[in-house]
Length: 294
Image (cartoon, rainbow, N blue to C red; front, side):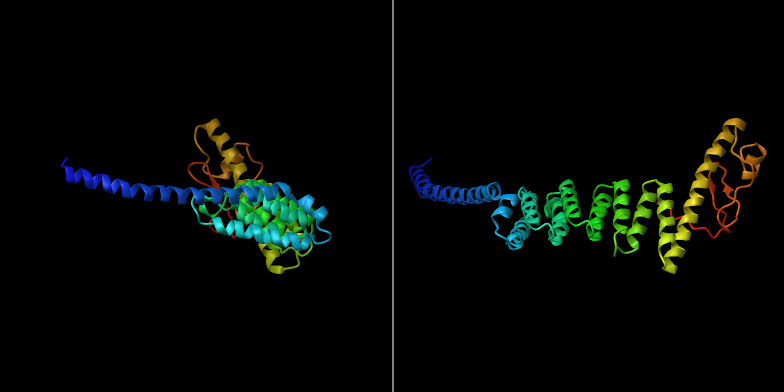
């Protein structure tokens, strides 16, 4: 390397070094500030628990609850959409808010949405969301909307059909709850494979509603579920027939003649069930029964 090139390289390094140190210093200041902010937030949560604040609020619990709810919304909004964002303090902020004011329904409803959101939209903590809504239900047992929210979490986030159905059904029995809550309970039970539970809920809906359209819908669903139960039973009998004779029966009449049935089974509309070549039972094309299988 020539002397002139060496001189230029050394000079550039001398000039760049202070700039590099300045950039590092600025970055460190920013990191320190963010760490202090995070530490301060955590300290506030440790020192100002909801129960302690409630004792010291001197009757201003609702005001403090709204302040903390606003802080929770801001905390979530600042991080929403940011890849890899940390939502560590969201659940504690919501817990403080609802401890200060157990009747602040909006904090349970929207707070649970914040907690359950996934990816860059939230922490993906459906478990914590359900805990929050359960806390809301315990404090507000007549608020059917909280049951709706929890049923949604079980159904859409966890695919937990039994708990989703039971939650919607419990909420449907609260004064003022809309009829579709019971509708959801029945359909989800059916989707989860519990036809008997679904039939029981539809039967209850039929007995309790005065809406003619809902009663008609309930009858349709009950008939369809009855047909599904019949078909499942006939499929099992067709399999027994195959094991005995080596082939599937061509009709329910053959199963009757073989002693597997006492008569020719018909669907709720009065039409005999039809068997395919593989022994699977289904409704007659002429039948008016509608099966809304999941």
